[in-house]
Length: 164
Image (cartoon, rainbow, N blue to C red; front, side, top):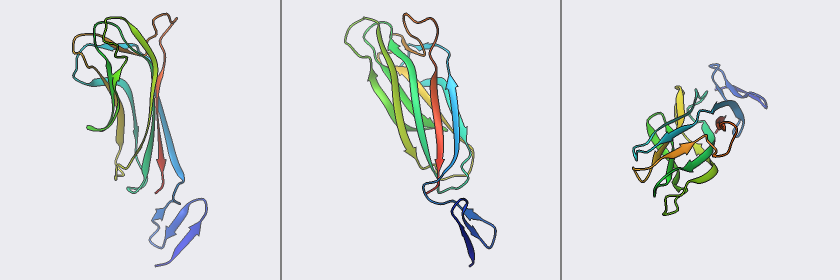
């Protein structure tokens, strides 16, 4: 089988298929979410921060950067739980006990960030999202809100397809 080696495009085979050079960033997707939200249930729910990417190759890795802003707990003995989900599959527990203090004081955590290298093994559209819960199941936790702020903060998610 013949092929063309190109430092920019990677390998091109005689059947016109291509394979990118390993380590090359193929595409970047970014999304933001700035709505202040709260939750008092221990059942995880979407935060509203979501982004989708369609990998060019099934062998690609997806590097996920998440920055959740304005995180905290408002009442009772609870803590903030955060997780990263690919489509409907949990792939990373970001934080299990954010802001836990064993008292009823309001706690402003600030930002909680995570980085994860995923191998979705697909060329279909893939959605990544962050979900949250109140671990105490009885008190409010928050995202995108600061106690003495003039407005809401903005959480971000960035997806980078990396050729493998």
